[in-house]
Length: 100
Image (cartoon, rainbow, N blue to C red; front, top):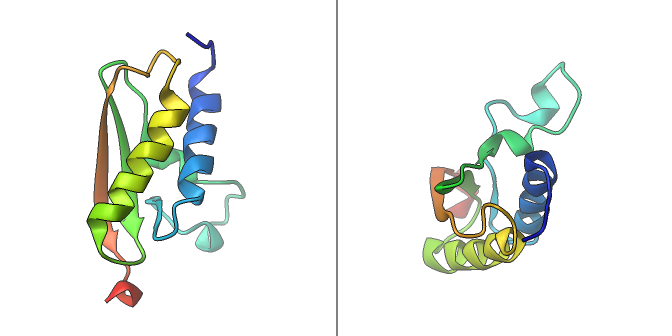
């Protein structure tokens, strides 16, 4: 088991999701609209020993292949960490209108 902090793992999960064309982390506010500088992507990831939940926005369809790609990418990041055996829950919170 690899020893990584929750923040490091969250950053790696976000980086893995950036490679999945058609999904992006769901954040409470668009980074370009915030007066607080920084990357908000990590707030879409909840790490728990039993369940890792990631809130996502779909920017294209169909969803099943996107979710499968995200699951594989995130699973590879979590493997060998303390969250490696956690259930992965991918939640689509919105679908961008451009996807239709």
